[in-house]
Length: 184
Image (cartoon, rainbow, N blue to C red):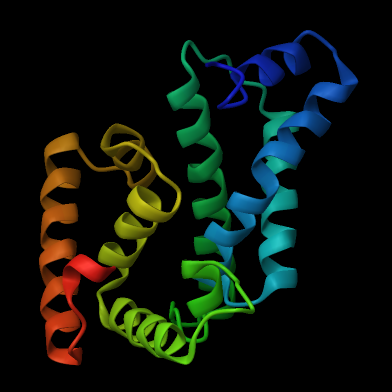
């Protein structure tokens, strides 16, 4: 199980295995780029942010006792790099045009499904930034609440409350748009 979250590869990297960092990058690059893309809205910037995150991992060699801490650490590095980038550029965080990233790309989607997905993305975009971030990590990146709390630097209780409020707000917006919450 530890290999699933890359802790085994990271430990090999710490012991000097050159290929272990490549394994980590292969395993985490795509989800980290998608996560960064929610913040920076530009694929090339998101890829640069992830490269910077791996450089940070390379130079700040921390030791982890479990895989969830390591995974949360990676996402926190990317989040912090994105926030730094946004502070520098002074842009607002928006999920406009992110339908394909959030729900997956499938050329064969029916028109009705695409319309529903567009409405879903629009509803998510109208949520406060904290809600979007927590929902993305919990549901699109499949992070447990403990990992989400470490990434967004809130207590577990605050994270559970934040997720509950985010789901309630999203449900309300979906109902207004005529989308059944259970269909999502």
